[in-house]
Image (tube, rainbow, N blue to C red; front, side):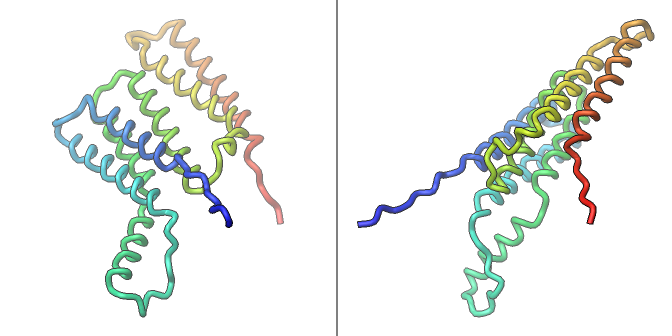
Length: 195
């Protein structure tokens, strides 16, 4: 008697959907019921739901020849094609950033949103490719540089901007050095292929 081979269930789509929901909740808290914020919040929630549905049904294969199939199956295949078409994740990120821009948030609030959105997009792309998280290990220096720049931006946003002084000049120098170091970390990972 043969034993059935079990494939491990990937939790990456679930993690991606939860990160998207966390980003939507994080950027929505300060602006519930304020003008255009409702439209942006609706867009974030709709895009996160669309992304979750797309990730949930991504394993279902699509048939090119649907002419002889019954109507309900053709409708199901059309739904699968339509749900896979829009860039849900990118739309969620843009709508979340627009929602963040619609209210006056503390800099640390924006930093947390940036970190959650970055983790969301990376997790979605890991779920799409089916790759393990260890695939991102060569990008750790780049991600660390991005996190440092995000923290540096939050620090710059928390400084009072009443008058320029030695503190702001020092911060500009540190920011310029950080950008140069980040570019130095990123450039080795860019490969160009010549034919």
